Length: 86
Image (cartoon, rainbow, N blue to C red; front, side, top):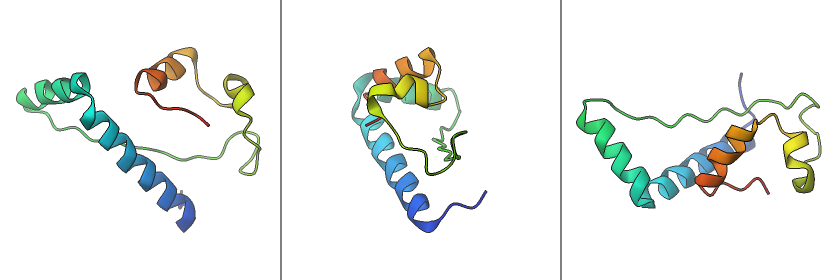
């Protein structure tokens, strides 16, 4: 799926911010080094896809769990990486 240029830029900027945040976290950095020491590379992939309610659906931060297709585990993981959905 081709993303509109503005959305592509936002997703790219988010990816850069996530990589920076993860690299500044000592535990994440240590885990990445451990994985790389075993001969594996790491890649962060972000995907932007339309929500089921349509691309212009309003985002309500008060109703994040109901309006976004994330499980409790997804939300917990994002919270552990200090990712906020607002």
